[in-house]
Image 1: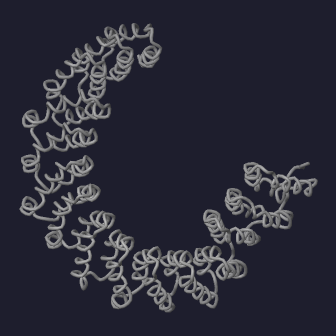
Image 2: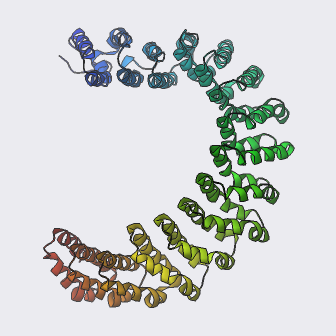
Length: 586
């Protein structure tokens, strides 16, 4: 049927047959079959050629829009890829016809995909085509009888506005204002959600009408519409001077902060820092502090959580004075009955230590940290201990350890393994500030206990922890305090502990000298080649693979080779596999 294609346009011997075949496949009762043929639209259109695609295929696509939503979703996705198939951007406006119909669909997913496709096509359309074809499309959608096309129109205005004449821009502004005041809540919400993008395109001299519409819609009875007000406040405020912000935006912010709907107050709490930064805080600082305090005391948990996540950043904007204002509330929030509030609080307030003096930290924050470290909810304990590295930057380690060491030791044996893991990851930070002697007294034993933990992630982290400690305290310290304790694990009846010892030696081999590896570690590892458990034996081979690069040739020949030769003949296939990998390094 097909002949060779030229450089300009594909040629088909009988295009009518191909069109007929395509139409027949679109009538297939199987939805997946129809989806498959639509996914081949690009190849089909190339076979038809530019002219037939424009004259036959596109009208055909406009006639099949009563199909299943799944089919229409794929169709909307594929149509935007037909720009080259219709002859390039000069004819791309033709794709707007079927896409406009899809943008009127009842199904939200289909509409959204069609709008996305129209925006994609609009990016390549010449400005004259935007005005001649896209604007009429938006006009028809925006004045449709049913709500669904009007929703699509509200999402397309920003794509056309910058590329049309001032007269058409004026028309689009009127259309936008009408959609924001539409009788249908879904249309109002959709248009209002686009305001923050649309307003950035409007010249300041034409902004007043948009502001009036914004102030009107901000009082809408639907909270699903009003909750969009907060983000729009920020977008419009960026376009105004201080006097205009106080006149037009501040009253709206006040209303939102006191709104009867928790969803609106939640948006205020979420975007509070952006609001504070842009709304002339020097003149309205005390008022904004009052709003923040109210949000922290809100009756809805979600609002309190959003506000708690901003405590430190808000206090950074006002220093110790703000900390003093919110501290009584923080004390209450640390005892809140909802664990999610305490979790977010613990995650956020460690940063307050960088704002206050050391004296204030001792007076106000230390007991708060200790309270949260002993919280009954493991996530609360985890959130605060995982941010202890921030405390190290602002408080000397001696003071920190003197007050927190008992709690750290207690958490090291916490029933929740994630808390134990967080403590392990914090240990190297502590070690950098301590002498080896002090560390041995308080923490070395804990580091060894973790090697026998029942959770693999803890044992794995414990081996890596030993490497970091060796880098901090030196090889001599590891020889005296760490390696002897690892060697004890050889007699453990639990094979997992013996494997942990191998893993520890494997990690340590990268930070100790070759003499230590050859004289102390290697003897233990070669003994494990005779272990009764295959998992231990193949981990022996993996450990030897790590040792080989750091050992001398003489040691390799006398100790490593004989051990690998034995393992190469092991009855277990995994042992032989890893032994072969190690042998290839010799």
